[in-house]
Image (tube, rainbow over all chains, first blue to last red):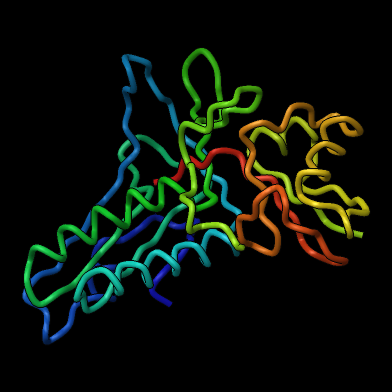
Length: 154
Length: 77
């Protein structure tokens, strides 16, 4: 399994080891961390929740999409759920390829797709309140996490 | 019966992670209307619906034992 959802701290070395190959001349790693300030508001900690089985399925789908689009060797990603503190790693993505352009491009694509359609939710805990971010319930807008046309079963 | 899984704010509002209802034969759009009118979940605009772990549109027909999930806008990463 190259995709994983974990409740434990993410170790970058582990995800690097999942993708490194003799044929690779490049490994890109993206590490998404918990930021303290968003638009001037101070986050105390975050809580992530996932629809785990579907999230894993969608992460694997993203890996397949990448392999169709770029000549990459391997893709691995891990998302942490549960309570995360400031500077903790929420997500890590690693891509290996013979040359660097596709490793960079595919890695960015992976993260953008995760943010669009993998069923994982973040709850912000601020000094003065808490909220599930991205929950647009009650409005027409589906401003974050909008799956694309091809993401629906027909 | 069909299990309807709830997450994030919907789960907190409902006070449980799933509800059960008879949805077989209904379209996803009909189920959405039903849930809005007949349950305390309220307005489901902007909530995606997944059947058996795949996103589906409102014309998708639900079958017996399909596992349904209400998917609020995601915010992973």
